[in-house]
Length: 257
Image (tube, rainbow, N blue to C red; front, side, top):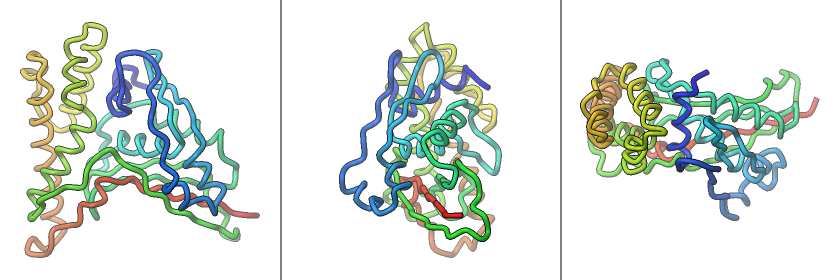
């Protein structure tokens, strides 16, 4: 379990240096699409406070926690990019607030077959003989749909930029890099991700320049994503649809014995 890397949540959940982090409750239109399924409705409406680290708590709906935990738990070609206790804490919080006959899967994948993807599963698998009802929800990932995409290179760049800036919002991260209370933990988090990507961020961190550090990380991530797209499909074919970047898909399955 990594106390150092759990500083990620302070940024990912629109964090502040101290206190409780709050996430907006979904609007009525969003809730109305799931009201027919009590289990799905509870995921979108029930709130929880999930411990992060360093006396921080994150507060939001179960759906919001699941979405953000999925983004934070992302892997690249199956390798975890950042370690954190938050996804596990989210899983436990959701388990305590749902019945034993509910299985919830949250998935984030910016485009089909992307090498970068995250997810979280809560609850047991339904029995093969059970009558299963499923409801699908779409939750904001905190990243915008890539615009002006006309090639695998531009899609990879847009997704990589969005993802790295989601993990390290430049303005808030700069403040943390010059705050003696959290500067070391924030820098260690950068170094951890940089090690996975094989990127040197020593100079940007010494200068407390998250923008420059983000550019280096995003550049390498974009190269990896583009290489994955080109190796997995006909390069002359259409550019993959990147609209899923903006959403985390949550599927709630419930069943009767």
